Length: 217
Ligand code: CA
Image (cartoon, rainbow, N blue to C red; front, side, top):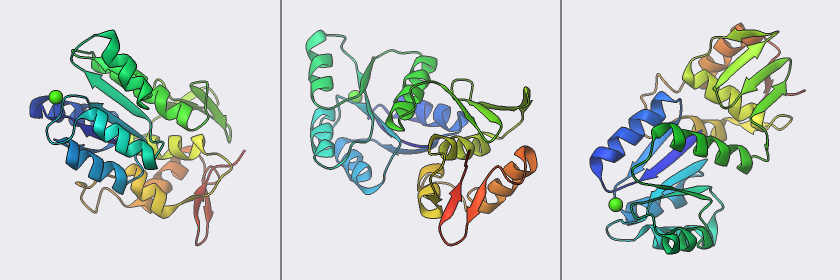
């Protein structure tokens, strides 16, 4: 899953990007509103973390422009915990909000919920192909045994599981699993797929020649 963080406090931006990458997300960053809307319109992010007080374009302006084109889930960050701010953000098309300062664990939980809901998944656990995927713990179990997946392998499994029964194209997988800064070695999709098959069984992920991959019930 790929997330855009738009935040002009560079120290916070760095911390958020790093923490989200450690959680297994691909992360792009923008330090002002103009760069934020440019990226948000250029890619299909799984979620956007959007600060409200930004240079060039405010978070509200970014949100307004984004909502003309895209339904990407947006979590706004607001420094001021005033009710009118939150109401304006939610009315403006935001899906959730967090008041600064916040705990990273809460941000992660809210992002997981947003991404689940955007994929039509109401409950945090997915059962597919004999594997249980716990999107809260970001873990997979098979036959009651935890399966050790890397963060990236887990992200790939979760993406296909959220869209089980559908073919996900390689292009889409690249777009959602890797960010702009990753070296070419880290984004060898087929290597990740083959590692997952080794761990979860060769039939867990189906290759659709010329189309992409799928996980089917
Ligand atoms: Ca700010």
